[in-house]
Amino acid sequence: MKIKKGFTLRTVMGQNVVLAEGNNSDNYGKIITLNSSAALLWEKLKGRSFEAEDAARVLVDAYGIDAQQAREDAWYILGKMMEKGLLEE
Image 1 (cartoon, rainbow, N blue to C red):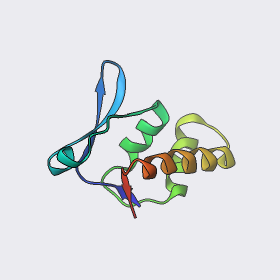
Image 2: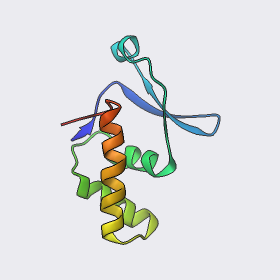
Image 3: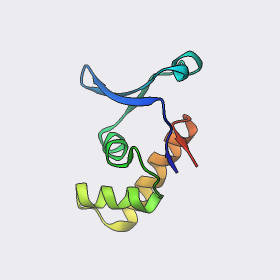
């Protein structure tokens, strides 16, 4: 999977916000905020294809949590991003 083109992560008033750009802004009227873990994944994984295991590794490296917890958290975060239309296969 990968982050869809046409979306950018910005910090607005201390909040991590995903903004649609270009043609996406005409069709995507949502404002999506990301918590710090989701924003970290966005920054580390943007611009490349990745698997959930890659996301879990980022969380382990950043937070020192165990691999199973990282997998669960990664699947949850990526699932939410997929629901919002921010990821593609």
